[in-house]
Length: 216
Image 1 (tube, helix red, strand yellow):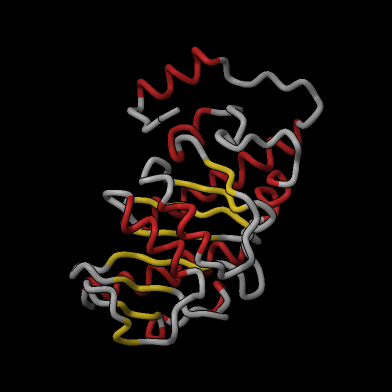
Image 2 (cartoon, one colour):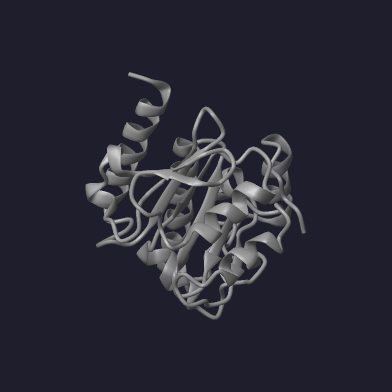
C-alpha cells in the first residue's frame, strides 16, 4: 500500500469515527489532508463522514488543480485559506458539532477567546479560538475571513455553523477539534454556575510549558 493510499484510508477512518460518535451528522462536515507530493485529498461535496470512499476523495495536485476523484466540498475556500496562510498545516477539519455551535450562540462567547479557560487541554491543542460571524454556507467570504487572520489562529468557530481546525496532520486536526467540542460542552454544562476557570497565571503557565502559539 502506498503512502497516499494509507492516508486515504486514515482520512475515511477518522471521519467515520467522528460521525459514529455524533460529532457531525448527515452530510455535514468536511476534511482535507496534504499528500506526500504537496497536493491535497478532500472529502467530496454532499458526502457523509460515515460513508466516505477512499477512492472517491477529491484529489488536487501541488498547483491546486483538481485532478481526480469527485468534486470537492463547497467549503474549499476555508481549507485553502488555512493551507495558504498557516505554515505547517497538514490537514483541516470542519464539523457541525452540537455543543460548539450552541456555545457560539451564547452571549458569553467572546470573539477573540471563543472557549473559556476551563482546562489546559484546549489551550494546548488549539491556542486562542477566534469566533467569526455568520456566513451563508459555501460563502467564499469565510475563506477571506480566515485569510485576514494571517495564520495567527489554528482554529476558528463559524457562528451558528461549526468549528474549523488546522493541524500538522489529520490525526492532530481531529484530536484538536474534538477538544474544542468537549470544551464547548463543558462551557454549556457550567454556564451560570460560577465555575472556577483557570486564572491568567495558570493559563500563562500552560502556554509557557507547552510552547503554545498564544497571540493577543
